Image 1 (tube, rainbow, N blue to C red):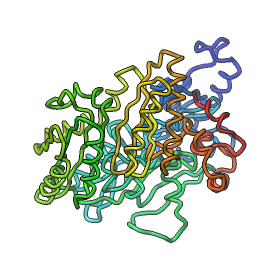
Image 2 (cartoon, rainbow, N blue to C red; image 1 turned 90 degrees about the vertical axis):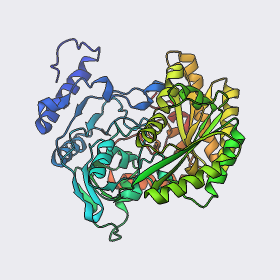
Image 3 (tube, one colour; image 1 turned 90 degrees about the horizontal axis):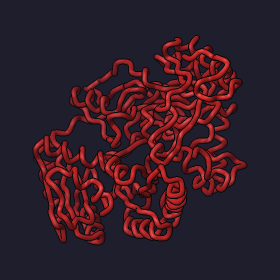
Image 4 (tube, rainbow, N blue to C red; image 1 turned 60 degrees about the vertical axis):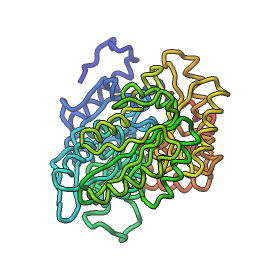
Length: 488
């Protein structure tokens, strides 16, 4: 924690520096001086929207050790009227964990108490700060399975997954995080520590407060622990990858896969731009004329998964340049590592990207891809898409050199225009990454009655408005034009 001197080295206004120092001292009394950061390190002022130039500011950051300290920090913030920005792994693409000036960051890194796994009941409880990949590893060790598998699993945290209702490829068959959530320990905006849901796999004794918190992006409280309803671990996972020379062939293959009688665990797609960006790292190499790829997966016992994988391969085979069915564990893992790395490979193409996870009805995926291409042409920017074909989720992306201010402005315009595709095709602004701050302009155009209902919930639980304000819900008086610049 920094001392306050007559001329702050980071260039902040002296009055602001004094305020920050006072805030840090108060937080240190709660969590300990060694667990407060002031000035706030750069990595806590940004999330994955950093690749589009979004960066925040904050007075201080606190790292509570447990739920009691978390509640004390939130209670102090409510009493002082200081906004709180909960933060997990900082892997979100919507700016939901990027703080505004005058706020504090509440980092969940230390909320990692020992997990409580009950294999015979298919249940596990984890601290909110537990890395999602560690949740998967612990489950496997206990003979259990947790379905949601976001691409950032090695760095995101399970509390953040609940806060955004994260998904990933396997959500097609197994559902997003909400489908696996039976309970959560939550600090409400006033500092009250409550337990929502519990160990029972099903409960309807209250309003679905657990469902409200899941996907609320930190606007209704801070998640400190989660209880997951799990499944027995599958014996094998067998992916099937098919590559096509044109998009239309790939789209027909997706339709065939969905009609073949098998419900794949995952049904992914990559367009030509994404394939070109990631081709160099594809295990075994891709055909030179590859312009579209479909990745499906069968998961279960060895016998059933093999039958399902064969059926999926047959469905995807027509017009395919190549169909691959790795079955060795090392080859399967290599293929999914490649898929998880596509986003980083796309970033590397130009040094930055603006991605919008728009979602459309699955049968309108082709229309959405064509509309994205047209937007790229109209704005004169390179675009590409990949995502979860079965769920109709597109990671619609504009490639950009983020050091070029003019190019970045044009890319923002194009990315914002992509949100209209969802509305035009009967979809939604976000399938899994949330609204955060960067999609508030789009959210402000939703049904006014729906917006009013959401604000009523927010006002009831957070009357002081201190819990991650300016995220998820556009302010009642704001216009889309006013909101379009927020967080940029």
